[in-house]
Image (tube, rainbow, N blue to C red; front, side, top):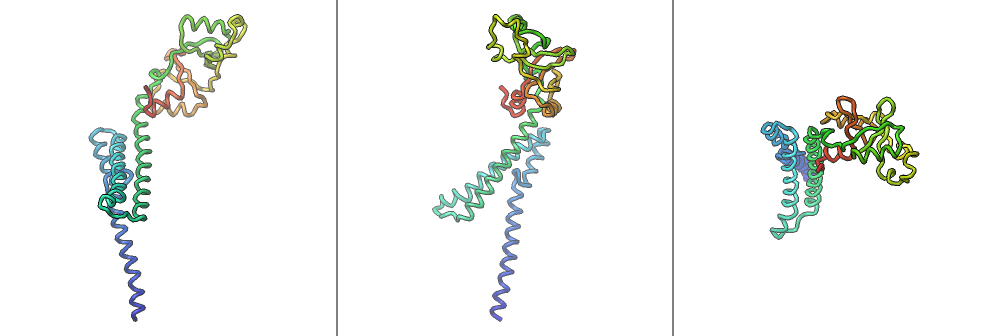
Length: 245
């Protein structure tokens, strides 16, 4: 009888443990910071106040980061201040949860900032001024154009389609006495097929379009069909990620 009574204690202890663990997990998940469920409340409040979901996500993510720091403080620093030895399992779990929250909020903040920056990504603001020259021009013609107008030079085919960009380093290696005999295409970087952007392109539509074109550079075309600029993929990435100067 005593043995049976003892065996019956363990299921009760196990049940109590799971009940306690679920209550603790539910209470923790209700804290007002992403990626916890309670963070949606802060996100909604800031969203309503600012009209931007992404600003709400950023605000709630910073609260989540504060909670992550608080976990380290509570499970590691606080016991040490009290002169106690932190339990290894508690420290490990606390650090793992804090790291998970920090990494998750870092991704959320980066994505939200990118989405907030999208409306400011405008082709004309990012491009370098450029003009077009026919692809059968010579290096001498390119040098004359640069002396007269400066800026980038984009070579176009007989149909007016951009096919290449004059490479400054390749151009500098050409013997000036032979410039009239060297074709401009020989000192150019090829543009990918379809690497053309309207000068008024902006926002997500611009980014999505450029992602579908296999090219790192794009010719910017005006509403009248003239080449007005050169846009580089790096400039777009910097603008979207907030690193534009």
